Length: 284
Image 1 (cartoon, rainbow, N blue to C red):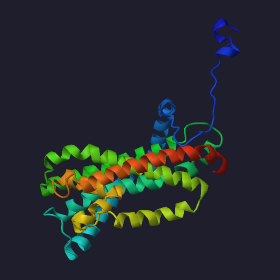
Image 2 (image 1 turned 135 degrees about the vertical axis):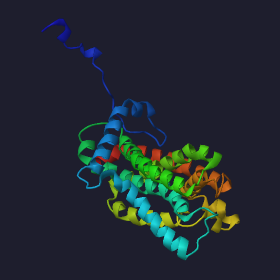
Image 3 (image 1 turned 120 degrees about the horizontal axis):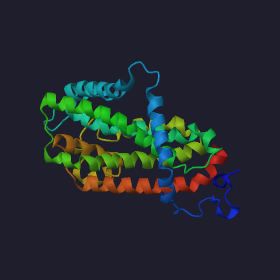
Image 4 (image 1 turned 90 degrees about the vertical axis):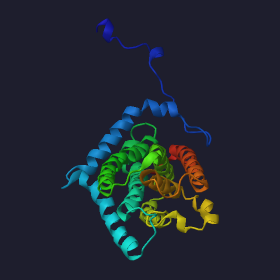
């Protein structure tokens, strides 16, 4: 054996000490950053699985918001005469369906991410937070494809956003944080209680009607809008609608309450997931 192939002395072999979290506030972001390449692998794998052996591929990311927009425009717009603030109904609904569709898909994928990787979790160590995080990040590709549809539609209706569009990245970040925060709660619960997976579709459906997707938040009495803002997606959707159309609810008390709710859901989800991380491998 050559000198270059000689084994390292025992004292120089790196040792990783794996210990479960001792409290609610133990989060190792440095370790998460060290596994960033693994997170990239999971994101790329989720994207390939989603479009593998599909007949129309990425067109599904366009059809879902497009068909929902057409239904909403017909029934809630033309027939129910829902107020849109002078914005064409297709633009009014699609600007809300973009963040909502991303949130709904990302939340579902994040919820199932831990259980679907149970064989890997029980054999290899890595920060379990990588799983719901990669599921949420992978959904941004569908969002980007759907956003191209919105741009084409906005050009057709000549709906210029104005300076409000500068707020767009901030609202996108809020949507990602909301999906990740809720996904952390549900993914940990789903690993312990498998009936959570059956409750998630009902939760998403109820959450959509509790959010200003099919209607503007202006229908809510002004004195109750701060309470309505406790729904994190209320501020996110109205923020998207305002940023993309230049009309609707600009940053206000409701948006501030929603932003605060997003922060609480995200931080609470990270602490809860971290607390349950040491038991997930045993019960999954």
